[in-house]
Image (cartoon, rainbow, N blue to C red; front, side):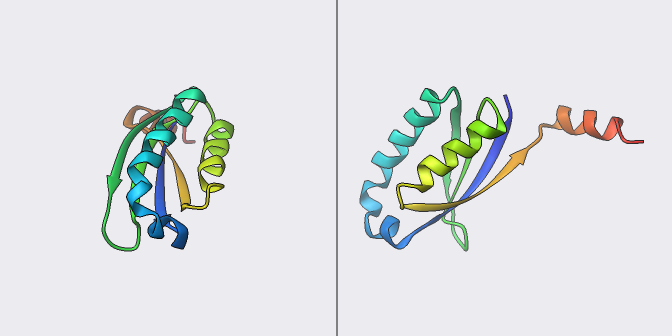
Length: 97
């Protein structure tokens, strides 16, 4: 299953309701499971990015639906990156002309 890394930033609404954030994280884990994916890791971070998640989804389309669904709640803004494992990286590089 493809892996994705999302960089999250809290919106004003999200930071104003930060105490509900753990409950929202639990709900997000269920949304991922219901979509056939899995939220593998969540990290609160310092600096420009407030949190980082690592997740798996069945496809790029499913990952896009998941991030749009979570963003639509208005608590976070996301920047999502498709991540390739070392094995996938080696296969991609080996196929270069």
